[in-house]
Image (cartoon, rainbow, N blue to C red; front, side):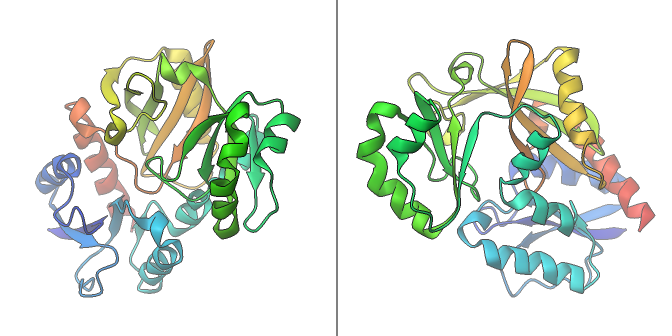
Length: 289
């Protein structure tokens, strides 16, 4: 029986209900899983053969410490899934620039570096953005994310300037389809498509997270959309044990919002076979080490 760790955070010290489905699927494959709270110094890693990053959902609040922790695993020769290199590449949303340069559709985005003197109203006017979504480049779960119209820019300038003083920010064109069709999450294990979920915001909001009243349901996206997501995943040269492609369908085209490669919720409960698929990818990967 091999023992691996599923990395989590202090609010889910015994793992999420979703990930416990994978734990159960791994046991018949002779793989035991122990929870690893990533920033708990008392965790003993000596008997762990690999760490799968699963629900470290506070890393954006202490980013340097999180990257140091992943480095520590590397230094201890403990394999990390997805790899340290993937974590570092995916950590800051600037990776979207690289994907856009390869032809991937993303919303029009203006990147604001930390400490820049940036006037929100001027930026929206110069880029002809009637509505925009503002978020940090290192964030998750809609942290410090809000939607504004050009008319509201002056009222939000002080809050925006305060954030820019501390961190990189991004201003994205608002995609109105998110309020109707919602955002589509497509899950891949070992770069093979598994299943998909629609996430829709509550009436009057744009954030699809359940914390803000969003809803979820299993999705059956058209093959053309799956193929677009597959192409995004295939553009990553490194192996990926898991990936989640988040996008909005606009006239048949998948507009990429995020490529989640660090610790996305993978919605195992929405497909009875999904946990088994992921478990088999983990087992196959461990056999190669």
